[in-house]
Amino acid sequence: MSSSKNYLLSIAIIGVLFFMFGFITWLNGTLIPFLKLACDLKTDGQALLVTFAFYMAYFFLAIPSSFILNVTGYKKGMALGLFVMAIGALIFLPAASGRSFGLFLTGLFVQGMGLSLLQTASNPYISVIGPIESAAQRISIMGISNKIAGALSPIILSAVVLKGASEIEKKVALATDEASRSQLLQELSNRVITPYMIMAAVLGALALMIWFSALPEIESNGGDASDNSGSKSKTSILQFPHLLLGALCIFVYVGAEVMAGDVIGQYGRSMGMSLDETKIFTSYTLMSMVVGYIIGIITIPKFIKQEVALRICAITGMAFVTLAFFTHGYISIFFIAITGLANSLMWPAIFPLAIEGLGKFTKIGSALLVMCIAGGAVIPQIYGALVKSFPAQTAFFICTVPCYLYILFYAMKGHNVGKAIAK
Image (tube, rainbow, N blue to C red; front, side, top):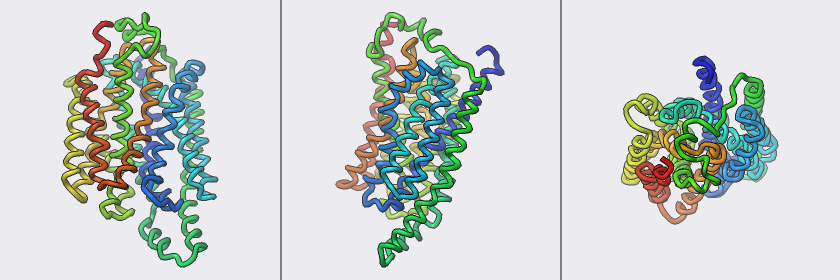
């Protein structure tokens, strides 16, 4: 950046973007129980298609996003992502009017498309805008913005769409004829129309603001990373094993994070807790993540390196999930929620470790990492399948502990694989 003022302005603008996609991403924790009720779904597996549709968009759109960014640049690419997200929000309007679960999933997929473009641009932008050694600190600042939004979004949306949810469940169950039952569900479904109209308008306005802003372009094919790594001699991202291992690390990390953030409500329901209680459990997880990000800003890299922080987080995550497995009720919910503390510094640490030294391959490498956000689609589906045969606590344990074990491997060895020759 040419000046400290421009640097801070860029940080502030990207912070707004992280707030926005945090707000939208963590609405899924509320949409899962809402759509299960409003669309009259019969199983948790069906309801968890919410996360599947949303996160699978990253798998299909992240790599194309890198090519789009090569044409548009970072700034216009981020604006385009916001426009696509606005379209996804508008799809919720006919979906609500027709109580069409398929259309709701389509809207979520389109929002995921926009987010894949937005994240493919914004994450490397914030990583390379300053020294790579302090990238985790900058991403932690973005993470606070993201997760504060994530903590607020379930509270705000559930206050609108799930107000008196337990009472509605009882009325639907006691309805004596199909017409009365359908009317109750339609009235519930219509509750999302106003919030998503507002969301579409805000996203559109933000897109225009970014498009015409003074946010500077950055180049990702030069700089320290390129000079130090020998990336100029490489011909493919397949020649960066630390990136490929990092992509798998992102996959399992996001899966574990979505389990703690979005699945926690269904986990509580399996223990007999009411929908009025479980509808804001996602916010508890996100609040603990905010605490973790604050710790990261204070400690990285001044006191600990980002790879050391990743080791600590992986071990802590395993400990919390194990304690959740051996406890019950609200205590078990507490341990699931505070896995957010362990998950908080994982993305800030994994992403810069994985893109370090990519040079001219930074955009495509970033796209590969964003593509692996699809872990948030796959791992909850595994949970949905397992919970049919195992208790929820057992299914949760099986789905998350292997994730943390692999993250620990990446923190200890995986992030350095293939780097020694380059250095």
